[in-house]
Amino acid sequence: MKKHQSIILLSFTFKATTKYSFFNDFKIKLLFPYIFLIFIISCSNPVDQANKVINEQFDTIMQEDIKFINTTMVFIYYSTPSNYWYPEEYTYSEIIDDKYKIGYEGLEKLKKDANQIETNDENILNSISKLNSEIEDAQKDIKKKQAAIKKLENSFVSLLFGGISGLNDFDNSLSTKEQIAKKEKERTQMPPNVKSELENLINLLTDKYKFEIINSINELEKRAIGSNKLEKAQLEQIRATLKLKLKERIILTYQSNDTICRDKMLEKIFDYYDNQDLNNVLNNITMEDEAGILKDVRDNKEYKTVKIGNQIWMAENLAYKPDKGTFFAYSNDLKNVAEFGYLYDLETAKNACPAGWHLPTEHEWNLLEISIGITDTTAQWWHGQDEGGKLKEKGNSHWEKPNEKATNEYGFTALPGGYYSGQGEDEQTFQTKGYLAFFWSSTKDGATHAWCRKLSYENGMVIRFNMSTNDCLSVRCLKNENK
Image 1: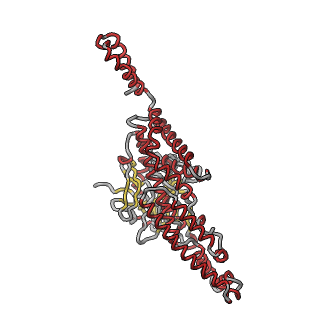
Image 2 (image 1 turned 90 degrees about the vertical axis):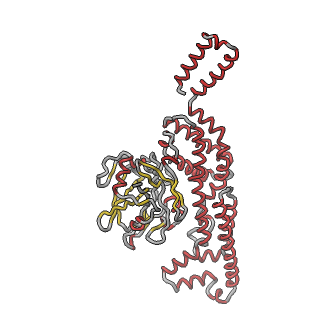
Image 3 (image 1 turned 120 degrees about the horizontal axis):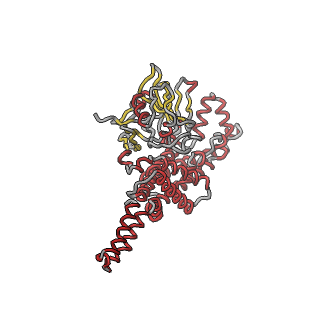
């Protein structure tokens, strides 16, 4: 009920109670306070109503999520192998001299930290169990190495070469630089099975942050808004209240003294939350209506999707690992796949999308540009002014500062996954993660290049660009049209 309508109703009711005898009946008069109460409620600010709902229902909806956040924040933030194994600068000789003590204790700490995670998620619990098993196997192997080192220390051969480190130096003297580097890498890295399962666990935890926790916040937001039609500023106020409430609860229950970690992880959660399309909420369109979930049956990965104009796009970078082709995790670090997906060369990208989806053509990218307000889609390089910012994820969780003009107004959530340059052996490098996003089109430009779209941290334009088909870029799949 609109405020002016309520005022008219109240005025009519008041006059009626004084003019007509029917309203002078005692029982009828008793109804007047309730009518007045309805009037007060109908005239109240929807933001105030929403804030009341948030305060009343926050603990009911978010209690389990708060527990999960508090037991995973530090773990996720510090989950690099060097924090549970030897720092990268350690040599194999130094590890031998240490007799694997640091490595053994680091693995023990990793097991303890993982077991402190509170969750009912079966996938996460299974990953923790498998990580424990891999750690125990690695520790058994370390015990064997320690016994071998102890036995070898007092041997004649060891004494002859000045200890075990001397033996290692002698072994290196018989090898090429490439062989030495390869052996050092193999001997000094965290046990591969432990590293692989740690990366899997971190990916599962990150996905829970990105989807389930954000879904809980969305549910609370949905209840808070109710059937109210909101202005953009009002929705932003409600979201600010939600974030403040979440921050207060986390601070109140946070067990660690590491406030830097806490604030960085909160910033990441808020970035996930802020990068949802405000327009869908303002128009009372649910994420299931205009945006949904694509489940890739090949590996059971799930991707958010978003409808822009008449097209339905993946709202995340493709992270499918093909059986063949050329593709990379950025810096060959699988941890990057959870956030940025894989980087594919053109031929691999053409065949990487799931059934019913495809790599978009140059023309289909043009249609997307038109949908977000760009008119000069035939320009050779620079398209639009600030419209590209409507496709970029907001904030600096993934983008370097200043991430100009980023609003993610359409929910596309473009991420700066960088690219891999495949231009010959001397130039094969990973470049620009955090600074640039590159997305393939399937349309070639000559024999050796193809068109792509580039978004930058330093402006809001969409850049039409051609790259070598040997380069590896991110992929956003487009849903096939129903014929």
